[in-house]
Amino acid sequence: MSPAPGRVAKRAPTPEGRDPGPRVQGRELRARGKRTLERLLDAGAAVFADRGYHAARVDDIVKAAKTSHGTFYLYFSSKQELFRAVAVEVAAEMVDLARDLPALDRDDAAADAALRDWLDRFAGLYRRHGAFIRTWTEAEIADSEIGASGNELVTQFSRELARRVRTAAPDLDPGVTAFALVSMIERTNYLVEASRLEVDSTQTISTLARVTMAALHGTGRTGPGA
Image (tube, helix red, strand yellow):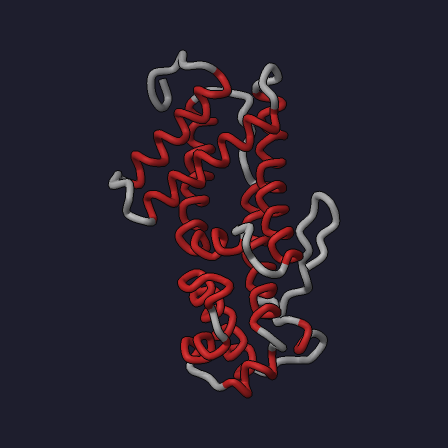
């Protein structure tokens, strides 16, 4: 991927919404081919998340997808190309979520409910992709272009939050505040998913919403809807 500043590159998806990689771009996939492609993408995401970029092998991916090396190379020229295809999908979902972040310029029951709903969606996305995202954004990934695009994803996500912060709390530095809030939200979800923080999911979302609003508007409210 070669994203321009402020963007995450995205290739056109297949009719099923999955990115197939250069080898099958522009070629009509039959139903069986689409299913095979989906298995490879899902298997790749799982293997990369479990083993990391360096340790993952094509052999691991084809075993997880229950297919052959020959089939793998019909769709992708290398594990790097598959990694990019998975990253395109995850990036698109993350950026769409970031753009759906509600306005944060009010501190009332409606704003609290909207933020909780968004945080719940973030938690769901993190359950699906958190391990892969951490692999993607590791500084030691060999392909610097892939690593750079992962860092750009984090930057773009923070940028969307910074826009809300700029309106909600003009006295705060929007970039620093957004980065701090993204770090808090991401790390909390990581600890929950890694079973290092044993807390009810509803309570987690409620607390994150209250802390976010308190950071932007002060601590005048004592609870949701107060």
